[in-house]
Amino acid sequence: MIKKVDHIGIAVRSLDETLPFYTDVLKLTLLGIEEVASQKVKVAFLQAGETKLELLEPVSAESTIAAFIEKRGEGIHHVALGVTSIEARIAEMKENGIRMIDEQPRPGAGGADIAFMHPKSASGVLYELCEKKGMKG
Image (tube, rainbow, N blue to C red; front, side):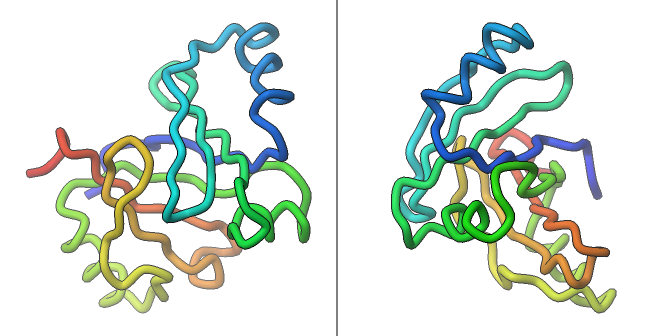
């Protein structure tokens, strides 16, 4: 079901201000930056061993990331679990009484299909199910 922790999402006010810490101080490799217009964020992926870090910068005040930063400040936003057959995983979560934010997968960064579990169903942690195109099966 769950293959690995795919990435940890970290909300930041500015990629330009934050990236030097990750690339120059921590010496992590920047894999790329992309804008996810549907989510109103710009994301930077960094390789951290077997897992990636996803820095999320809001590009609009209407972004859920902007709201998160306003309420809680910068910091860990979510943990993404790499899965196969995301539709089946969503169904399993619902069968086990887990409230889903996303009832159907939607496009995420890096070409992944994603779906979030409601944090009230997961001890206050926002978990993302993440199926990469190469992981189907």
